[in-house]
Amino acid sequence: MKDKINLVQYEDLTPDLQLIADAFDMNIVHSMLRELSGMYLYIPNLSRLESFILRYLQENINRPVKQVALELGVSAQYLWKLKREKLNKKIQYEKRQKK
Image 1: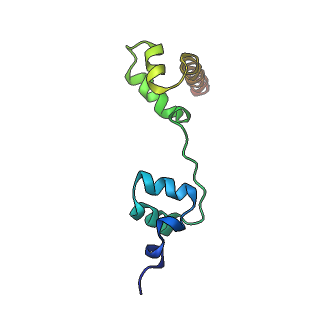
Image 2: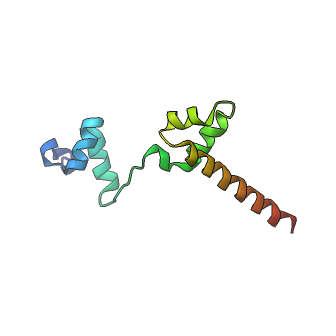
């Protein structure tokens, strides 16, 4: 018997799934329906991936923060805030280790 999911056509899709089909193809949509049915997915902006932002900043440590911020589509203030928070967490961790 043929997999029913393979019978789903572009016109049958919700607008969100049509976006995915447009960006990739129907095979990806069929796989998603097969493997992820019923799930709600949130795809964040790059700026919400803090660990990536911090790693990118670290890898580009010799470049101006404003230039890195522009490349990432975030503000320089946001990058400074993330760096400050990371430094504070590191200091707190080191204090706990000394106890």
